[in-house]
Image (cartoon, rainbow, N blue to C red):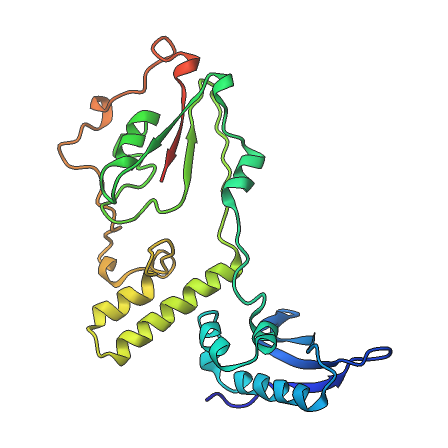
Length: 268
């Protein structure tokens, strides 16, 4: 149990209202950059005894910090009234962000009517999708290393490439929203703590903390990795016998690539 720092109280609905309201400071939602946003929520009842029962349930949630996560909602729904669950957990989970729509609105993928075709590269992790993409866009040289290639899930974000004969580059990057990043970090910390409780090996604890289970978010890219302390970047790049430098395949010139053959490439 956490030290009781947050407490819900009962409040009359106000002038012209007969229903009761609940008021409390939320331990996870921010107000002026600090936890403890003031929440006022209607309880949908005129019965003072029922309203007090709901407030008591809210105080049980506020006193148990193990429930203060989106994952705790499932347990709370089995124990508490849906109105109290909604008051505490609504807006706690990250709001979905459609990165595809954002990028499409700024830099649309050209259509078939504009002489383009879409090619989707599919394959398991480490199959060579990124290595193939490097050859198609002319970055197959060892010194360029774009996009990064590795047998592990390195290019786990959505990548769209549009080829053009124009000597210019444009890019749109969409980042994870702050609340989604916070949830990933919380889940990684909880996973590491669970490994400690289960008395697992130190390297497993480190991996669960530094790499989220779905590997789309990795704290090790920000904090570093103990395994790479020697300076190894962790990138298992192209094999030693792969053609590099002048031997690398050059992208076809304009005489070999017509407008209808230009492709927008998507890695998934």
